[in-house]
Image (cartoon, rainbow, N blue to C red; front, top):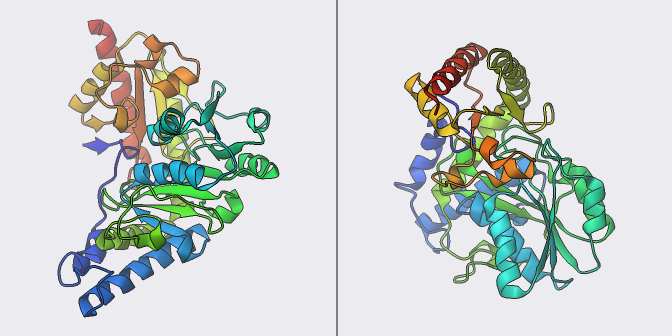
Length: 380
């Protein structure tokens, strides 16, 4: 089997399991407990926080551990909007993950916020000029994702954040898909908040983090014991935090090398699919995209049927966001790019880890051509 659905989730690395194992067994304490077992857990949590902070280029106190990317996005959008009295206007893009768009809609429905949604071009890029035009005196927050989870387009986040800051508006980015592939220095990006998810990096599901700049007021979404400096109540997932830190250390050692190799492999794969499948169209930006993501539509077929045929041939991939799996509706991201609903439903996304080789991707390109031909011949 060749697994090409890493944008949905990745396998937990052995080194990560080994790092977290002690904190599931003998060092299982609650980090808030004032005894030896608890203090051991607290030290491990502090070390993990320092690792995440060093990776992002921020202070450890600016890292909030969460249950994953969805909670990190919710805390950023709701927490900053409700904690900052500047106004009740939000700006997001039309291709945000549902964790961002639904959080914004919650604020609209229950708290009277107005939400401006920035359209993207056919490649999935936000126009910086459109953002500048959308900002108002009462804009409380802008949120634009770093790299799209379906088509892989990478946004000019540093430029967009600078525009927001010219008007005194905080800027959040969902960097869940960018993590492990792109530089996440919050200083270079100029962002005020950034969301992460461990299971995209080789850590287990159920751990994530939010960077939030120390000067920003942040209203908690979860209330209780006041953990995480009163920004996220609940007993911390120490083993998960240790796992996230271990995954970061593993990935960051070879990030630039892996990204360069993946880009070369991706471009060869894209060229092979476009050359052998006449109907294939690449979605997202042709070059400003994640190194290990390629998404196509195959008009005249059914994306789900192509996926089933690929799996029969030993290739596991997806039609887009795992969070929308099972939905009969066309992808909002692909519709935002200007595709018709009929064409959007023929989408297939390929995303892989650094372990996948160019030779394997060449095999996959052959399988794609065969699968599309098979599906097309059956009229499904």
